[in-house]
Length: 363
Image (tube, rainbow, N blue to C red):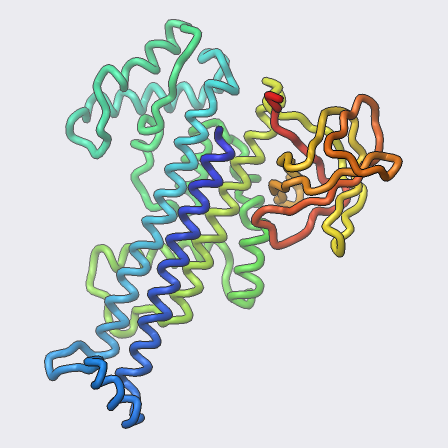
């Protein structure tokens, strides 16, 4: 399931950035001990064999190596996540658009060109694919077979540049997310990005400039020697970890939003109602719901494109229009119900007029 795999990939990003933050904090603690003027601290450090010899690196050299390693790993984490995001979307598309010739022309064109590139470079590139595997998906689609496959590599092979705004727009456009210009506004207005730009950076930068700067640091670390006046300090590296978390979360929510909207046509998702009120002290939604079946422990999605909001929530308690608690409510006509929820990965609460979506249930 697309949403589940995206959530797993996001968790992997968080574990990676959390590990980097842990290492940064340990390195900083070690530097505070090793480079202190406090004789007692240095004496105790020496007893633990924490000391430098004459040939040891300086604190500046240590910080340069730390900068290079952290920036390279964070960019790799970000790039890998975007590739997974695109791959999962392409794997889901044949279930959303069951006939190849009904795919948007930009998808089919990019697929054809990408397959051609993969064939011409077969055996030379980093993708470990069989030749028949490369050809099969395109062949099935052209011949209007009941099943077809979009190999993600046929789209990713055209993405050769660093993932700045322009390259992200190009990549998302190629897989049918044509409104990524407005999608970029989604990312800019996403709660995690705004939290980062406004509160962590104090409004001192924009998303575009922060992303460009991040990539410039990565390229410098990968292709040249970082000079003494070019490396990021401890606090700035910690900030970059939060930046990668934020942009990955924003892109994930954007893609899940597109999936929910597109999957309505195939009855894989359904818009069931609108939020009328959110009681923050009780974590309760009052919503007007017009159809569907809801049960405790079900997952719902709260969505609003204008506010860049797309968050999953788990139902903990249900009350019908008469205020009676029920384990399951079957809605056949419009009514107001209340849902006590746990919102997943949200730093802002739901708001009035936001829509509620559910996934198709096999129960």
